[in-house]
Image 1 (spheres, rainbow, N blue to C red):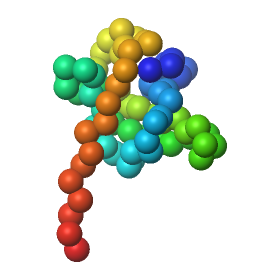
Image 2: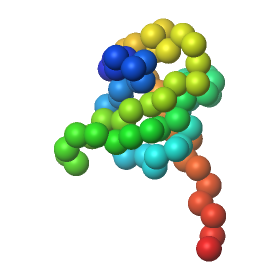
Image 3: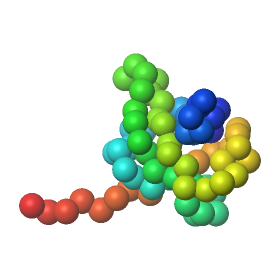
Length: 74
């Protein structure tokens, strides 16, 4: 996690680009929030995470992970 935006969203640097709406967790698999937007250049993208927890500032400089959502077959 890099920082909190003025509207209290979490901004993170990405290694792989997730889908919008996927769940973000910490190293203990505790849900932190959901991906709400992808920003920046393709070569070094960032994600905006809408937190589902009160103490999101506690995650500064910590690794966060995405749990891929299951695709529906259509």
